[in-house]
Length: 180
Image 1 (cartoon, rainbow, N blue to C red):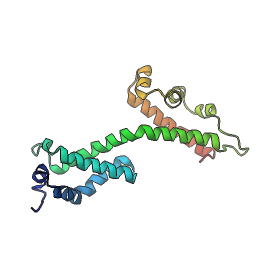
Image 2 (image 1 turned 90 degrees about the vertical axis):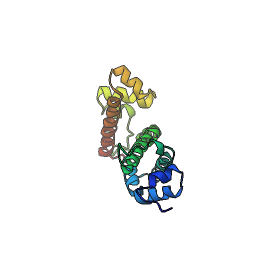
Image 3 (image 1 turned 30 degrees about the vertical axis):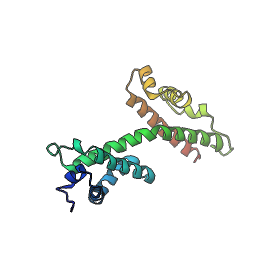
Image 4 (image 1 turned 180 degrees about the vertical axis):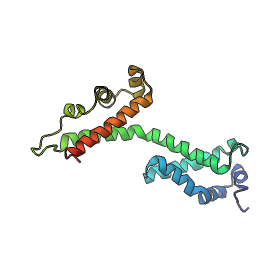
C-alpha cells in the first residue's frame, strides 16, 4: 500500500515497516535538526538518538491523539525529549571527562613564560568562595549535585549554573595564561 501523510499513523499502527521509511524520508530532516540542537553535532550520538526516536514512534503510536496535535508535532516532541534524555544520560560521563581533561591540562602545561605549572589551588582562587566550594564538592569529592543543592538550600539548577559559570571562568583564565 502507498503510504502518505494521511495514512502513515494507521500504517504504523498495523506495523507496516515501510511506514518507518516514509517517516524518515518525510520528517527525517526535522527530527535530525531537533536532535542536532540538543546533541551539538556528535554524529554517533545523533544517529543513536534518531534510532531511539523511531523505535519510540513505532512502539508508542497508540498514544498519538490526532485531536491534540498533528503527527508532525507529536514526533517532533518525541525527538526533543529523547534528545534531552540522551543529553542527561551522557552528560555526567562527559563532565567527568572534562574534569579529567582540565586536571591533565593543569598538571601538564605551562602557564607562564618561566614554565611554572598551574596549581589547582591557584586555579580555584579564580572562583568565588561559593563556586570554589561547589567545585571541590562536585569534582574533587564526587558529591552529587542534588546533595550540594540541599546543603546550600538551593535548586539543583542553581548548582549546575554555578558549575557552568565556574568552568567558563576557569577556561578563560587558562586561555589568558597560555594553557590550551
